[in-house]
Image (cartoon, rainbow, N blue to C red; front, top):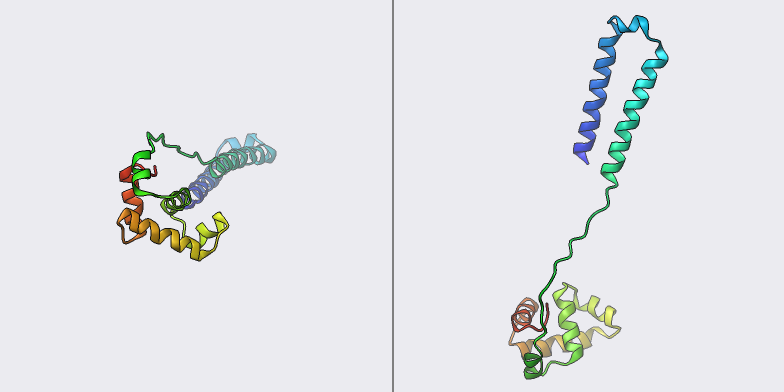
Amino acid sequence: MKRTILLYSLALAALLFLLQWLQFGYIVRDLSLEFYLGVVAVVFTAVGIWAGLKLTKPKTKVVLQSNFIFNEEEYNRLGISKRELEVLGLMAQGLSNQEIADKLFVSLNTIKTHSANLFIKLDAKRRTQAVQKAKELGLIG
């Protein structure tokens, strides 16, 4: 944003310098005031269009292709429930316990219970460890 403002200011300063220089030159005597006002209007219109396109450029979203294959064997071996797997996926997205509870329409204590069960089943002490182990085991992508 600051760069755009700086470029716009420099363009304005260059235009003013050019007009001052032309004022003392030969061209001033031959051309009318309307011509100079037209030049200024065209330049400001061009700069305005450029700035508008630059500032309102749509952001592109990068979607990474994942070769994730769910490991059903580990899922069954660990005895993780579908709801616990869902909670684990939301943990991996970085949601807090309260946000997970709100998203799943359950109480905060239910999420804490699911989290505690996941920590035991995945042999983890923290959420980050549980998510990392689940990724290594192929339970989440």
